[in-house]
Image 1 (cartoon, one colour):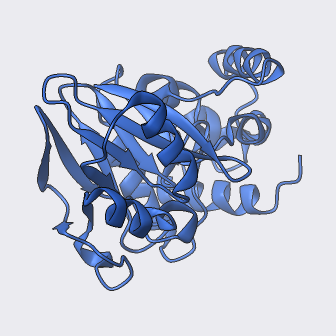
Image 2: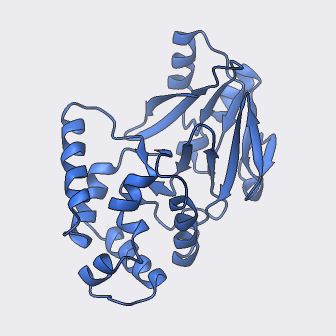
Length: 255
């Protein structure tokens, strides 16, 4: 499955997908229609599927226009049906949806929003995590609880190491600066930040990351790690409490 990054707004990523075997073309979280349409026209493609991870306007703002133009099917969360206009395929946790020769498993991942979902294309080892799991970070808890988000992140970190993670924003460098304050002894994190700095100096994306990389370097996936717990003065504390403290610190971090 081919995945094309389409930058939008200040730091969003929209993803255009193509299943080579069937020729089906999808888009994930089109916050605006114009850059998606330009990419489709450059490649001579017509859109068949619109995948939405959550209801925020910077992720769905262009969906209605693209649906009308291409008669594409809108795929999203059943729990957000009242907040996603034009939803055609409503899905919940554990459901599967077909995209050409590819099949995506749906994960309910509440926390950032109550109805947030993620799409995992198992054969392609590709995850679209929206604003739940970021490279070196996670989403703010606008509608969910720390317990919900910690459970959501645990479900995603259990995927294969090789799974490529395509998230909603280019936040890696700022997330990494925070991560170093709560996991300062993590050699893998330091190496990752060197790689990120080099990429951003060339104005290149840091996405995709991988589940394996995030498991080793993302503090929000490591709330049950003794090193992270000790670094923030919470050795032996329940992981959900450690996660809540990490999220609280990140919300107030200025770095």
